[in-house]
Length: 271
Ligand SMILES: [Zn+2]
Image 1: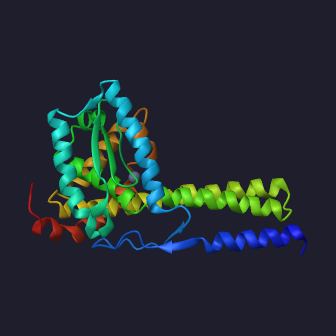
Image 2 (image 1 turned 90 degrees about the horizontal axis):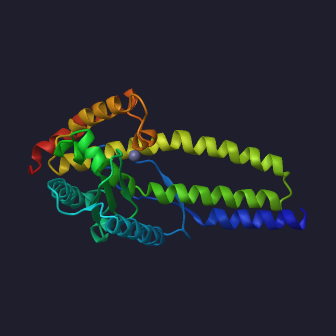
Image 3 (image 1 turned 90 degrees about the vertical axis):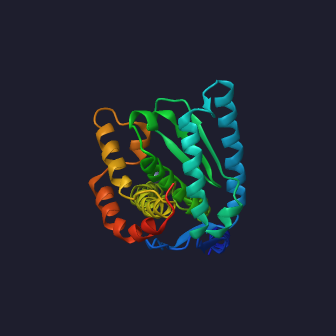
């Protein structure tokens, strides 16, 4: 082994030792149990804190542009639905009871909604108004987005990007030709973004379905929601739909999971 190769091997070993399998959530009735791997030097707290900063900035900008809606009936609806869903989040991960959850409604015609790391929720008025969402359907969207945060899909993606980057450096150090590294990067990219994001979408669908049911929202609304999304995607697809395709497989996977959460909905206190 050359000096370079030894250094490369040492760095690889160090990186692998920093990569840990973690259990972000418990499986729930829907049984989401995929093992996740994250870099320990990218801690949950760090990711949540840095996301919280950019969230505050977004909300501050919306407020200064007068597009932050704190008082309309929809803003109050959103807050009430969020409160019920957030109360169920500890079923999947107990530490989420200590998160600084926030929910904000921004006046924007786009169909979009998100829950970032650490429980920072944003809805655009466009998704509620254009799709004429019922409370149950809002709970379906919000439950899905909350599930992404509970599963730490953001941190997982960052971990992977970090890992790929680091491995690329190791490969260069070990003397791999540039072209080979670039090719490897492409392949990894393709493998990671396509199937994995679909996998993450499915996890968010299932956990979201259970959160909504436990919070007293009819799980069948997930089907009417995605049918509405599918209709909305005819013509130019909105931003949300480009990352959340309203596909037949999504709808059939949700349909298959509804019987698992129906008893939870029937037992739940209704809003
Ligand atoms: Zn999603």
